[in-house]
Each structure stands twice: as C-alpha cells, then as structure tokens.
Length: 300
Image 1 (tube, rainbow, N blue to C red):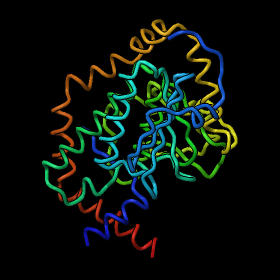
Image 2: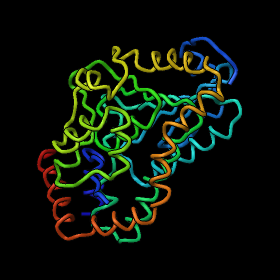
Image 3: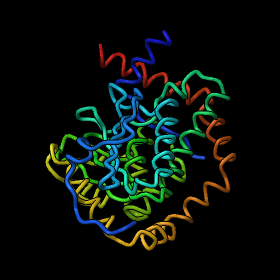
C-alpha cells in the first residue's frame, strides 16, 4: 500500500504545508550544452555548466512531476552549494527536463503517515533549500516550462528572475488553503516580496493558481515566451544580469533579502516544531489521506 501511495504521490502532489563578476554580454544557450563541465550523473538533477560564460543549467529530472521529496531537496541544495563554490560559475538557470511541469511541489508522502522525526528532517531540508536559493550569491533565473504550484512556486519566486512558458494551461501559485492548510510565513514573505502584500493576501486566502498570463499581470513571473524558447530566453537574460558589477549586484540582493532570511534563521527550530506539531495532527493526516485517495480515484 505504501509503495502504491508513493507512486501515486509522484503523479499529483503539491506542497501543502502548515503555518507555523567580470562583464559579459548576452549569450545563447547552445554553449551550455556543447561546452559543458561538471555534468551531473545524478538521477534527479542534471547540471550543464558552460565554462566560457560561467552559466550553469540545473534541470530537475524526477519523473513524473519533479515532486520535492527529501532526496530531491537534498540533492538540489548540495548541487547549488557546489556551483557556488565553483569559481567558474556566476549564474544558474533552474528548469525541468519534464514536459508540461516545472515542479508539482512538496511530496505529500514525506508528511503522510511518517514519524515526527522524519517530518522534522524533511522540513529542515525544505528550509535549507529555500535559504540556499533565496540567499544565493549567484544570479538565479527560473525557466518555468510548465505548471508550478505550491512548493514549485516557492522555488520559482526564490530566484532573481522568472521566465515562464506562454501557455494559459500552465499555472503557478501558493494554493495551500485549498487543502485546508496554511502556507508558512516565509513562503508568504517570499511571495509578498515579489508581488506585494495585498496581492499575496488575496492569493493565499483564496489558494489562487494563476495562469501564465495572469501571473505576468500581477508580477509573479517577469516574462512570457513560447514554450520552446524558455531556456534560451533565460540564458539571454542571464547575460544582462552578469553584465552588472558583481559586487554591487550581490550587495543589493543581500540588502533586499537579508531581513526575510534572518527571520527564518532566528526561528528555524521553532518553525520545524510548529510544522511537525501541525502535520502530525489526526485531522491534518486525514485531509492528506483524503487528498491521496482523490488522486487515486482520478487516476483510476
């Protein structure tokens, strides 16, 4: 039964969570593939780093929907740390190798019928991924080639810039309340820093998933392009970011984001404890079980 549910969760999970530089001009993507270095052989993350531009492309490749489970989160964070330590890397484009999906969000089975200890370990991995990405000294661009709900949305808005496929069928947003659960305060803060307080309040209260055109309108994404041009456009945009003085860009980024980061850093264990206390409640576990059952029926 557990194995069946795990297969099921990978087909439709979302991150439903509780409260509690030298100068360079624009470059095109082919170099990132043809002149790659440090190509990861991992099953969940593939990295192509072009030494001539200093731009890496991180591709999530965890079928069928890039569910953010403990393994993927850990590998994502470790990969980003390695790129930050590589003096030849100056920017990272984050995308998906899977069609029609960027990431479906956090894997519910990491939170369903598992021990409090496991839930705590999982939540620390979620925190670490966000802290590393949101505070990265590298320029980070999300190349969103499909839908990106909940935790996938968090990953996207933690980047410096977002390019999304111009397809009204693709959606993005923090939709936790649709399952009767509240997005954590640092999810909320990240979104508010992106689209403003009132838009965030409405989005979180209503569990809104925005179509790509709607997301552009409210500023949740920065640019829409044809689906086959998402990564190439991100690479061209990266060139503009890397043309800015590196120290000035990094200091500005830190100035804008440090208060939000420090808020979690000073409350990490409390946030973990709140998460574990909330997610292990019988009523929450029942809701998660009902959601998984709905997915199973839909699949059948």
